[in-house]
Structures are given as structure tokens and as C-alpha cells.
Image (cartoon, rainbow, N blue to C red; front, side):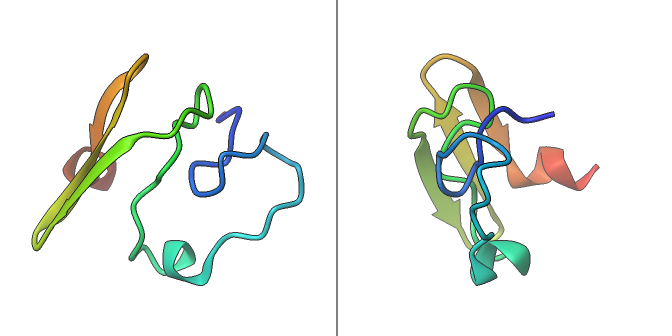
Length: 65
């Protein structure tokens, strides 16, 4: 279970509403779900990738499986 909200960076369960674009799957995560740090995000026409300095890279293709 994630410790932080990947769209707001706030601790999980703090009552933050999910942004509408994120709920539709149109927005990549901007914060690491494990540590809450801001990630480097690159969006391309066929997907996205996001890199946390501590926990590595995730991408849209790996989440589709």
C-alpha cells in the first residue's frame, strides 16, 4: 500500500481528493508513492515515465500489466 498520494505528495489517507485528470488515467503521478518526493516526469504521445531519486523509474507500460 502506498505511503503517499502519488498526485499530491500528501500522506496516504489524509483525505485528499484525486484530481479529475488522474481519476481518468490522463495524468502521470508527480510524487513517489513510497517516499513522497517530487519525481522527474516525462510525457510522450505513447505514455509516460517518472523517476524518483531514491526508488527508481516507473512507467505507464509497467502499470498496464
